[in-house]
Length: 467
Ligand code: AMP
Ligand code: ZN
Image (cartoon, rainbow, N blue to C red; front, top):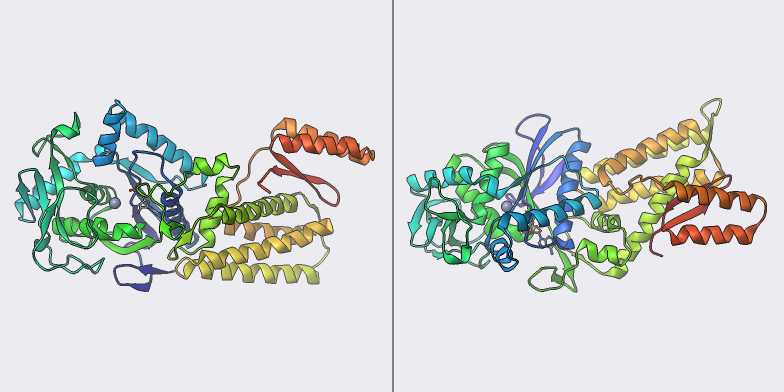
């Protein structure tokens, strides 16, 4: 498997620390609000990275932090007059719902920053003791000049003199000594910890170092984020972790590009953002956004428009219908290996091979999607004939499932009994040539959010998608 490593600025052959296992840490959300679909592009990217390793038969251990304490979460919870915990738990819950709607695999260890304060303090104490950190009047800072490799990830030029910065998100042009621990002041209300350090709270960067090392080990295989995290966040994570452990922190740094709106990064501060709920309110299925993300390779910027999303909603409807219709198509057994059988096997094998090669070529998901659609087209051809040989059916449907294990764009769902009953009634009317009655029933099914498609000898019901 080949993957682009930001650290070397090269596409590299992936080699894990331990055979058969990949350890992955991904920077999670700051839970002070609903995440926007720009953030969600990044979380889908993480999911694809994970699924790519699984496609290559690796076992994956994945940790994601939930940043439930920082300048923003504290300010927002105080404005809403609820405790920090209560406030962040609510947005964590919404975040999890979004991940599930996007069919993101949940075999992840999610961990709250506030549940790992001891670990953070332990690292800070050692950094202080060894002279990598120093105390100032408002907190404890990492001394960037003490880490000789500073800048190795981002290419940031360092000149030996640094100002000091308390904010977690700072100026992207200059390296600065950054806060590891921020001493309490009245803006923090009742949010503080004591223990090994003076009353205060952690900086953002130390959170990820502590959680990654605690749950996955001092050196891990893969660390992911979006490109805006390269500097200063990831650069700072490396500095403090490697100063602490005297070991390489991460072998492969993977960064996903941004989701844009009119050429600008979608962001809360610019106000040019949509949440998944905004998309749903307009009638879109969340998976159409997943499909849109997959169709654009992770290292390319992706401009979001609703016009474009409509295209993916249509493709999603096609996927749903093709798979369901193919499954329902009548099966029979050829007596021997027919030409058609041999041909189908050949096409399926070669598409599946090409699919895997695309995924393994630095996650070329755009290409992989073409192979998936090629198989669906072939399935459609069989469906139209009204009959499919059992063996051909299993070649095709196994390969489609295999691809979908990676793509995660087809999700089976239950059709309510009420809808099935209406559809069967309609079928009966149709057979009796009572077309007006049948059409009324079709409309009724539509109104209830489902769609009915007629096949040669039967029918299939799917969810209704936007036209
Ligand atoms: P935050 O909640 O701000 O910490 O962001 C969560 C993740 O979303 C981080 O990895 C960010 O880098 C990423 N992110 C923020 N804005 C965008 C965007 N417009 N497109 C893609 N990823 C983004
Ligand atoms: Zn992080």
